[in-house]
Length: 612
Image 1: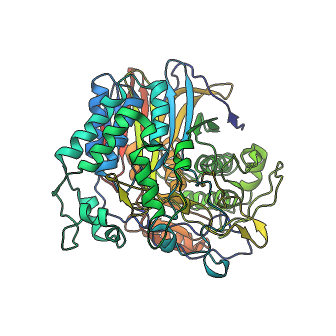
Image 2: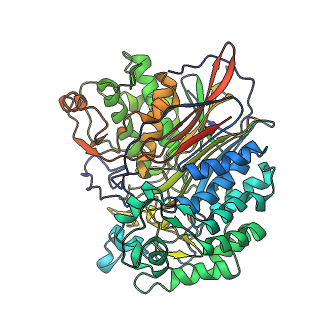
Image 3: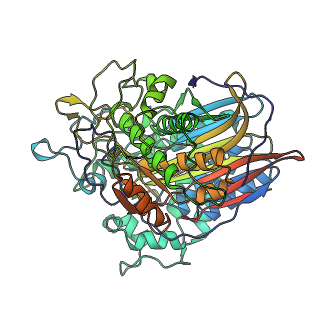
């Protein structure tokens, strides 16, 4: 197996294909050494809101899947009128800022994967937030240099990073958009002025949110004078957001770099009475999205392409998939799910063990590659085969230590962390065959709980490790000015694999929210669809499972009880938790009579697939 680090060209479609919110925890155990017990995982800030079964959607020409029906409808209209996949993604994000404010918005950041059908080029755009220049390694240290609690760090201005999603969308639209920028933002402006009905999920999350009411602007918008959350169906209008979007429609990302909107952001962050931040006007003015080299690797007869660091998502997913493939080739195959979509204990065991190994490396070695050189050897076939051989089919290792790749050139210690939970995913394919896979976030549910200009600001800096050192050694993901915090977001594009190992025809656009659990969510869906032959909706709906190098986690009320005895017998420490993924996926299915798209939306959220 080889790892591909390059912009790729695609060939003609070939080969058959089988078709057959919330996260309850923030990670605190990833990448711990074998001598260190994993710390307890605190409750995540974004909650669950139910499970509604959904069926796969089939279309011939184009398709879009987002986490909210209103955003999907707006993006579908763009595609119906001849817009590109990138055009649709711009519209979807602007509408999500309004209708799904707890998860993403123009005050946050994003990773965008794009495939251009004409040039066959794969682009990876990093719109991740950056730490302000004045942010130091002690940003999240309190008295006696002890790390702050998550709640102490997240609420207020301290954790707000420089927003990047608008700049990233703008850069990608200039390359791959076909419709006017202003026209793509207009649907969100109209909706903000006319209002939208509060959804069951938004109402549920507002009702259980303890900190948003502390911000006067957020309290006045999201809650009644009595302090109760607006009920389902209440029409929310947001004229302030409409005004902000008008500015962005005229000026683009420059509106967030200088002028009244930028000044308001800085004032909101620096003037918080209890927890002020260090963001300056110069930080906003100097922000630039970064086009990065797509990170691609093999799995079965496919090539998986995603974001390189500062995302740890693609690295960890590729490690897991390649370890599982090696085990299935050397031992008796262990499917994750059978043809009926039922989890299999032997496959779940291997999946969890592969996750332990991947999370151990992730915690030790992955951070913003502009600051930390990560060892590419952790994706080398001999290294992954050696790591996979550590998996015992009869006994769980429970806790894995980081490996020692051949090109390791520095001593790093893994650090405890909190990961993005207020996140959303958008997948689009257009009539010309272009595709987008975009994961977008404001980090925690409702971000920093700071509202201005009609939108919420991110708390992305809490994705850094709070302590800069462990046992006297530096932590790779420590806070540094200008640095991008490590993410687990894993938007992926999947291609057929050509005989020479390069990407062939496009097969899938997929991703999920979920903090560090994103890695397991995405890997589960890829294994269930590409290995086990489930259609994309069935793979998404499959109960979530995995390990982040701590307990083996099973989705509460969804994973079958029969797994408990089988996994316990193998030595697993089990933990049943809410695992509210927000997977959105679009998959190409081909038969002798032709090819078509099959789309799936996560039943754990309000997402919707629309196609034609």
